[in-house]
Length: 212
Image 1 (cartoon, one colour):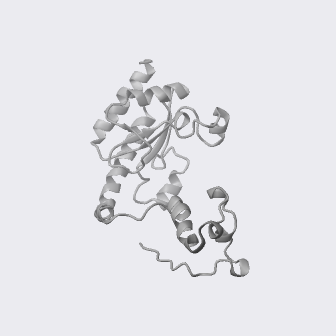
Image 2: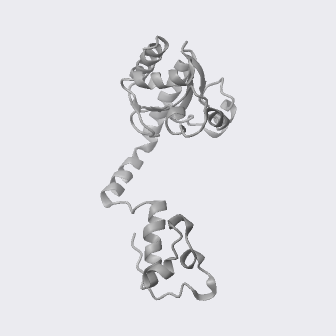
Image 3: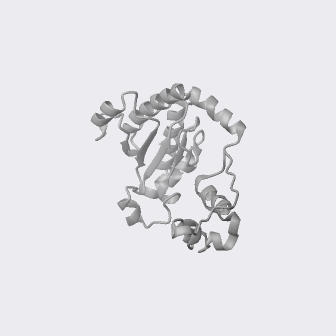
């Protein structure tokens, strides 16, 4: 996790290291060798590599990640089981236009999922709320148990309405071209009791249909 640079390397030799000697457009056109001299490599790591790849993980975070990895397979089985059950439930819900989840027999990728995902199709699904984009936004507002965040794989069920959040900078035509219709909801299904998840989605869909 530590890089030690003595500052004696000749970065300009034979013009082999343009990322150090030439202007870096990702950092205001800076020429690192010219600007920082012997500290050029260290600064390049600090302001570019660290920016792009993130900080070194702290010991406590490493331990927590290691602990989590040991139960990942158990958690994923529950994520998948809950997602499958919710997808089947939503597919029959009168306020749902469509559902995309490879675990459904009606999904166009179902046969591929049986071949490549024998353990289940994972914990993420998408569906369309009847009523378009505004209905999608109201659905999120009516949820009570479910979190409205961009997480994937959290122990808590979370949802997102991409058209009004992550992809709001695009026009509706551009969103549709990118595969994001206005009614689309992305859901990452957590480890809560599946009946509680169903109940939360059901009451939010019904409230949305009533314009509440």
